[in-house]
Image (tube, rainbow, N blue to C red):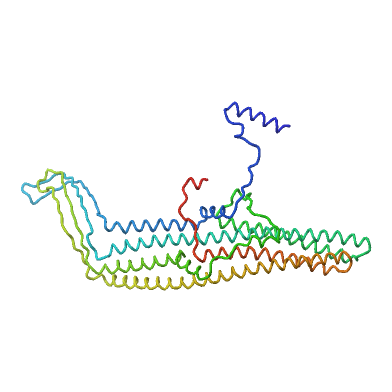
Amino acid sequence: MRLTLKSQLFAIFLCFMGLPENSYSTEPTPAPELGLEDFIEIALRNNPTVTIARNEVSASEGRKTQAVSGYLPKLSATGNAGRIHIADLIPVDEGGIVSGNLSANQLIFDFGNTTGAISASGYNIEAAQAQLNTVGSDLVYQVKAAYYTVLEKHYLIIVANEQVKSYQMHYERAKEYFKAGVKSKIDVTNAQVELTNSRLQLLQSRFALKSARVALEKIIGTRPADGTYRIRRQDHDFNEFINFLAPMPASQEELLQTATLQRPDLQQAKKQISSAESLLKSTQGSYWPTLGATASYDTHDTDISTFQDQWQVGLALDWEFFSGFRTQGEVVEAKSNLRSSRAQMRDIELTVTQEVTDNFLLADEQRESIFLADEILTLAEENFDLADQRYKTGLGDMIEFNDAQLRVSEARSNLVTTFYGYNTALASLENAIGKYPDMSEPTDKEIQE
């Protein structure tokens, strides 16, 4: 009654203040329900590796601006004030002076030194963007793998719960049989031991689920709703897992072709080769002269007649004939970097082939294993029903019953593990062929939402 009266008084206060009554509620905020796509979106906004990769793209753009500045005019102005004394004049000329200088320099041609640097910086931007896409692809795979692990642990809890219920019923039945003189005391003790073991497995399964949630939160870079969120899932019976089986993707050959075209690390390697070629061209340009235009204007504010305003326009040719072998060393370094980039490209191509092949074979194996695990579960459940009936009629013993119960639990666990192992393998295969999300930076409004 106190809470009701308090709520009514507060509602009157809100009406007096001109606020809607529903602006205050004593009802707790419901925990949000998050699915796979929600976790991926959160990870792309919060994971530190994405932030680092985005900043590298921004830094690359800044380096290109620096390179482009080499072909833009350079303007500068200087000024000074003081007093000057000229002793050689008769009479001696002395007075205050204020002077200023405005100068401009424009590069005309430098044999590819600047253009090579500009091209290299442009390719570096594309390489950095490809690296960002690689980070996004890897992150999506990590989120999916962690998400499927959480779902797997959830179903393993269900397996453990079912096992506890079965052993609990068996324990109660064993006590009744002992009281009736049908079974011995050892059956009761054995059933109690198995019940306690099943409770221990249930406890371990619950802690495994908590650990899996923490691992998922680490990957997405935050703890949604302070950890009160719920995982969106569709609970279904163990015999229905086979109906939710995702299909295998295209053939292995098609996947290899797709990976060759869209793997971001391959695209990054190609851009790094182009960048290395442009840097070699830029470095070799240092062997030749630089041609530029210059202009300057000097003005003076003084009573001394010697100083007059003047301007100058001209061409400047700058050629460093010998640099102490610095240019030769830079060219050797640039050629070595180019060869290394080409070798890295070849190594990535081989890695892509191996990853696509291995993940395709693994996914195919896991898919076939699911059908076998489903068949094993069906047989294990039939065997358990028989063992249970035999124990009830006195034809079976405790060992036979426990063995049948254990096989059912193992079969259910294997089916769950294989099912989510298959989903994880598909996610790994998507990562291997280079599937990546939209990596455009979210707006402030999207971040707030």
